[in-house]
Length: 168
Image (cartoon, rainbow, N blue to C red; front, top):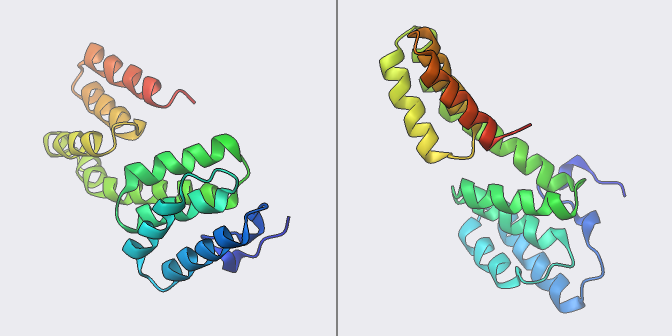
């Protein structure tokens, strides 16, 4: 399969044996998405989500959630796509986009961490941990703060939590 970069976030080469009616709905969903009408696209893709024959439906649903600032839901759907279709370019790009969003959210906390203002950084990392509970970065940074304060056992707990959330 060959895909063009201009297809992002949709890779229509992943259309697999959908009925004509489904293809028309899919085209409507992606057309709505490409016009920037993300809430409407989300409604269209949500109506089709029970069809597991094509990753294009789930990919559209995930990207629509992402554009509607529903990062946790989009992340789960992208992971579900990758579990079934591990080389799906749309889902791979979606996971990369979510990682970049999370890193941008962490910049403020990182700024205070780099200045050794650990009290403020800790508050920011705790907020990140609440917002993204399955992201190991905030646990790792909280562990580093504990290390800097010579609180080794507390640091160890944060590092173990990071391993639990992302073992790889």
